[in-house]
Image (tube, rainbow over all chains, first blue to last red; front, side):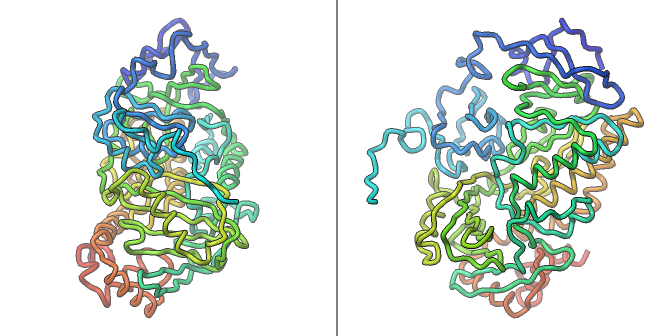
Length: 133
Length: 379
């Protein structure tokens, strides 16, 4: 294993994520290699990064209604091309590697995913339901 | 469980949780067996037990019912737990063994050096972070991506996915003595469950096979319609909503690579016939943690060194996993009339509350149902 230098850029396995990494100190989490000391000290993300992967790196034709989504991860685990990412149960991101098979559209238990040409799930601004009290 | 076992093995162990709280949100029906707790040295704590049913009831489409008693070793029902508390209890055991815990820390990639996984990259409290480790154990559930990033094939066919949705309903009529299962066309490719959690409170949920989903949101819509038709739920109100998916595939081709192991739902170890996963997750986590600790102590965390975990798991569970997978494939072909006959047979036979006993009970009167895997019943 290469010894880590604080100024070196860490290269991840997935090419999609390489450019989002920043010079960081490493925390060695195994018994044999662990030094004493604090956890890794991370640098703040670059200000131009919008979202985890940047706006220009999202699939333009699939949308998630994040107000309807329950952030359960069913779509992420079912995606045949591993093109989805659930940000800490906050919102789902669909990457450009999406092949638009629409498996996620059917598997989502609450119907929160759709193509851009169709409303994303049920419309957020649907006619207000009358509820009698 | 993996963190606890690794820490007990004397190696420095870090447990990361992508949320700010362990155990929340819940993505589980919260029903599990009790017999494995002793094997994993997990003390039974009434604090995380919501209900301890006597057994299970299986309802046929025609309304007939078979009662299956539990309370014996090897049974697959027995407790309904509060996962928000149960998971924290397991984390406390890990911390007591010496594991360190990082919250709001999410992996978004693995680090590979010379073909060996040697850690993860991700974010912690919003800042980028890199964590290097001699062994990485992925316990990231159904949505797991670590395995795929590490080069292991954990993909699923649509026929091996069940989409699920659940309410915790209060103000309902439910019997705390039984976990109820409704089979048939009410839940194509799956079933509806009612797991009591206390007086007038129950987890009411549905699983539908992905191949049977014809429109977006059908899972929730189907459950809503079913609940609306049940008199005993007419005054029910929801306290929370839970959604998720369950894998029902045959065993993965590989669960281990150099420096890396998959456990639990991430390793697709869920029982394909029942959807139960808590027990398999904890047992596999314990085994993986022990293997990781031994490998780190020996200074050899290559694939062959970690294979001990996979070999042990397959030796113990592979046959039953394949048997249950074949049984599920047969389950997918059954119509309501056949379900009525099956429940009638179970009502007479009164089997124990586990998959094997149920299949044995069916083998005598319905041999065609088990013909595809009859050899696995007796192995």
